[in-house]
Length: 150
Length: 194
Image (cartoon, rainbow over all chains, first blue to last red; front, side, top):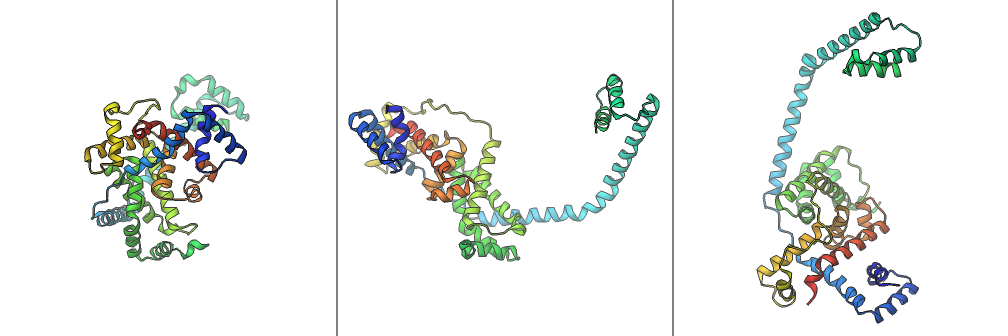
């Protein structure tokens, strides 16, 4: 065993986790190598140095602040939830319907104009790809492409 | 199923059934534990306090789905560990080379620091310098290694408990700690040499 190998085994040696064979090899090496003996001493000493890291205390009103924050956030969530149905009815649903109608209209008119009535989805896909310039990488183009790939 | 007899688990179950005072009791019992962990992991008082709040908020929000599967503290440490590691990921990467020298005048300071530990513990300045060296050495460890060291060295958890908290095997935890010890020795050896 050389010094590098010894260093890797030192932690396990100090914790008594080595096999008796490795233990004996390591002890033989340590008896002959002052540098490794020094390393062996440094490990527990540096570990002990971690004692010098005390943690401060929390401020006394921590729990009160936490509970206040929890109640404030609960109130906010309750407010948002109670307001949600009206908001959804007034904006999200009409917007979704309009988008769906617009998409359907664009899709059908696009097919009629270009005459892509083929029964083979693959053919339609390649035709669309040949005319990519017309679609100019818009979301509509991407959506159409994904549709025909399915 | 021993954990079902755990006082804290019982408190959490009562909180799940609507007794908010039980949650307050849990916070009172464990806030310092979470804060200490966060402080040593992040090294900043305010960040540690915010993280402690975040941990208890998560505990509060999961009350409906709470099903005891371990001791309460194991679960608490797991939530704290995840929150700490996520916070670390969100922070700007701070890279410290293993070979980087600590920014202290080591030749002048080392004998004094060694003396401060063994002879003159009242010397506030030297203790402060020593604290800075330990803090920096700990901060230089990768997140999981740092967490394993804090749980083992400061929170006195066993290898098995740390493995449960870190969702890992005992051997993996031992390996993390071995590497951390070697790295800490590299960082701190100049301060322990007398």
